[in-house]
Image (cartoon, rainbow, N blue to C red):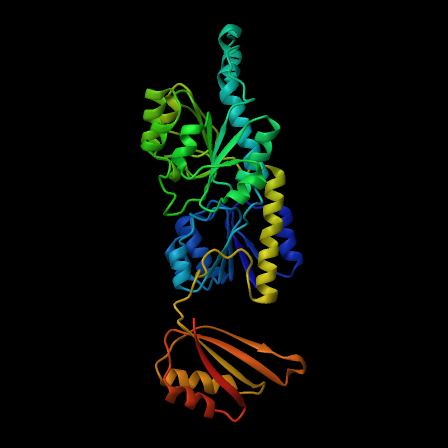
Length: 400
């Protein structure tokens, strides 16, 4: 199996793949048309990327069957086209959680203590201890979290160590989970905004989270509150944030932002960083040696399991629920051609199979096939299936 790596990747991960017997093609600088050509010419089965964009044309160009995002988010991959072509898309969730949580607190402390301005003035030869001695302090401040996944939970641990009460909202957060995490659950993002002295965002980019932090959200925040985003730029309405900074004195720390350069080196023209009270970093949330090693190890594990078992862990584009409406159960002797006769009969009846599994009993004499269908079948078709092979013991149809 050939693996194409189209991004900077840990040497240990490359060596791990080679030692596992994979043919590795390493093209860390291949982007856009160059990457499309490499996909076409390399014959790769698996593509590994970090921030590199994977377009629909790339997915259609070669023979890829798996794309691994060496990180948590996967909005740089055309998942819709991948799904339409039967290409698995997998990610490495949680492997960068500690790194992002650490950066979140670095940004919080930098906001509170004006670290960036302190450092800039010292480098310029200026001494202004009177001005920089003004800080709120984090102890006792209420931290509001939007998102309580693995990153959010690591942030909670650190907030509690700093003596900060935590209020949180997430679609998946229940009262029981909140109690276990030691936080107060809020029923909406707006309630978090109203209650918090500091807001930190930790949600994945999905249609339902795009611009979830909007003008209404910022209007609900306390004047002078802190806002931190280490998730995705698109979850925040940046124009609304700029307005809140100017009019409400909101202070912001951003690891992600609109207009972020796509490459490793470039220029930044984001006006938000010209505003007083806004600091930023270079989208480095997951950029620690520890996180990158963990992501490399997980990437190797995903690809190995895919090769060895035919199933990739952490796949993000499988249907939550198939269109199947009925379950056909076929108990049969485990012999050649039994299921072929069943599928031929279904094909003749114009019935589509959504999912199927064949469970073999001990000693491999008998088996049960569970076949998910997109519609009910007539008694005549059911009888035809039963009589299609002398090795069929029993046939039944159940609604789903």
